[in-house]
Image (tube, rainbow, N blue to C red; front, side):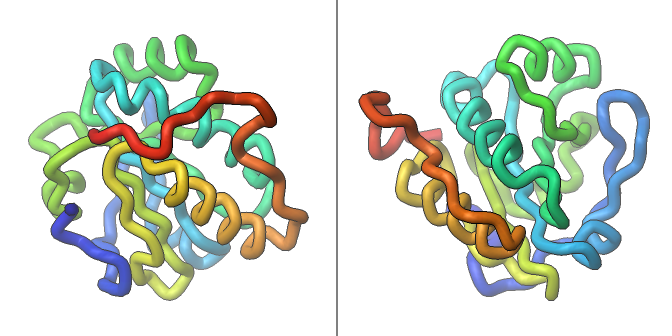
Length: 164
C-alpha cells in the first residue's frame, strides 16, 4: 500500500506536462476533485489500466474534474505511451528524482489517488483493481453532476485485480 492513505492530506505539487505546461494540485482542487494516476511507460499493468482511465476521462473530463497521469519517464517517451494507448488527458512529468512519487510514498505503479477538493485523499489504489476503478468512476460522476456511465462494457472480460 502507498504511504499516503485515504483520509490523509495529499502532498501539494506542481509539475509540467509533456509540452512544458505547468499544473498545480492546489489550483486544480479549487475547481473540483483530482484523479492522479502515477505510472511508468514500461509497466504492463499501467498499459492495461490507462485505457480504462481514458474511459473515465471521456465520460467526465469536460467538467470540473481534473484527471492527470503522472509519468516517471521523460516527456518524449511519455508522449509515445499516450499515443500508443489512446490517452488524451494530461500527463505530467515526475522523472528527475521522482520527487512527487516519493512524497506520495509510491512502492508500485500504477498508483491512483482520488483527491477531494479539500485536499484529502478520498481513494488510494495500487495496481489494477476493478472495484476501485468502478468506485472512482462513480465518485467522479457524482462530483461532475453527470449521470454515471458504466466503466466496463457488456461482455468485456476484465479481471478483478492485477497487481502493480
